[in-house]
Image 1 (cartoon, helix red, strand yellow):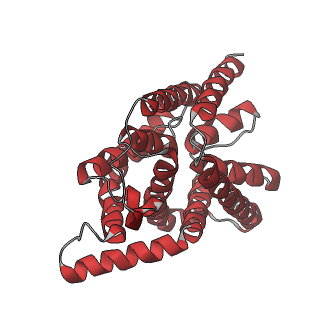
Image 2 (image 1 turned 90 degrees about the vertical axis):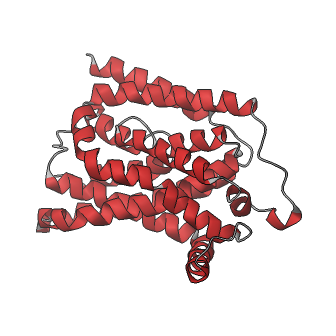
Length: 289
């Protein structure tokens, strides 16, 4: 069972690392070992904590992009009424890109998520994949610098959502499929979708926005599906730390979303790549003693 301090730290860590391209699952596996916290990560109460902090992140993301989600949902409803997706209807197209983009990870997650987490959940393995995540971010940044942007946009599509909606259906599947690697601790969902977005011609700001929109429904759905089987893990003495962790996660997720949407207007992935490599190697060295 987590103490209040541990819950606040772990919740805040999840809120930040879920959105920063540095792997929330990897940090959740590595940090307790580095701090010598004796936490049974297979215990239902800890799993419930992770699920609820993830759900808090999804709720914050939905609120942060609330106006966009209202337009996206309205666009999907319009397309259903028309029984067709109008390519000129940016929000209808964007909505279906998000739906299609989440199909690969949804299927793989349902079939193999628990097996993959069990197989790769050792801290040393998570640290190794954290280094790999850093390499992916660095390579994506370098390749993006050599890749032309998507076609010029007219004044009517001069906003991020409309420009993201220019992605093809195949591109949306590729970007969404990149999330599948994030089922392995150490790989970042945000980092992988950002890298895939850059590889498909999006700018850093466009790729970040699409990554956050893409992540919101899959994080929420995965959390809600697990809640019924885990609610029995709540004990009266654990409610306080659980609530503290959820609040911490929500606050830090909002701070991370606010910072990153501004950061990626002008900045690159390189600092996160360097962090992942150094943090992964440093963790491996500490864990080896």
